[in-house]
Length: 239
Ligand code: ADP
Ligand code: ADP
Image (cartoon, rainbow, N blue to C red; front, side):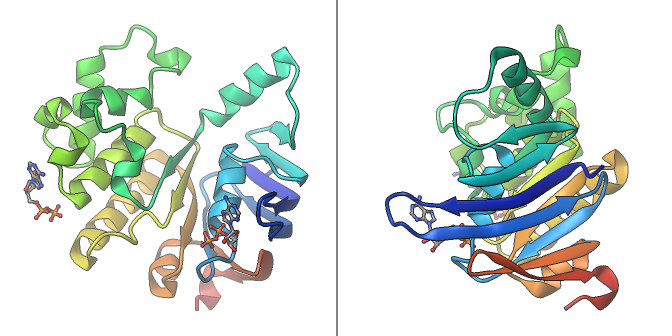
């Protein structure tokens, strides 16, 4: 089965009454890079939040790594532990680099947050782990002592990637992850994400609005418009 599958997902925002997602079904295979492209307001972030479990759908199902998470309501105790465990394998990188960090938390602690809930990192050498994670995104290990505001936008986004991949997630959900960066920094971050994919076999749900960028990175692309999937493209028919 697919690594991530959304099936018949709908979301209506209660306050506005707006139907932000209307019967959306998408999937991402293990190690696959899937793009989600559409204009502003088309429902991309809503879909990302539902996939990540930050938002509950009104209808439909979300399945990740063999575990299903259904709409509203509390899950029975045993199930919620299974859901939490599975979803640790999905990490997010947001558009605003600083959005991944708490302003008062040093980078080392923040990056380690990406690993500390994983059983296999119990008793791990935190300083070494963090230093290696920072160096993997080409930031000096000494940045562990810095605060997020002491980094440039590009550096901060690389630190967000370090936090996201330190635990070797199965899927990295990137929501306009390079859109706030200037073009040269954007290219560096894309190269870094490509390396993450090659070296760790990480799958991606890569959300963006720039066809060249999304098309250049992804194996398969969904187009979304007005809360509905309007098209699915293979890499060979890149826009
Ligand atoms: P995108 O990420 O493609 O720009 P969003 O998922 O952010 O789209 O938004 C989809 C639609 O839902 C938009 O019309 C937006 O105004 C609306 N929307 C997003 N968040 C909320 C919210 N918290 N409350 C009400 N409406 C929202
Ligand atoms: P980038 O090309 O990655 O966006 P910048 O040109 O913005 O980098 O920043 C260059 C250098 O200045 C970076 O190495 C960063 O460490 C440093 N720097 C940027 N902003 C700050 C800040 N607010 N406090 C301390 N150092 C900073």
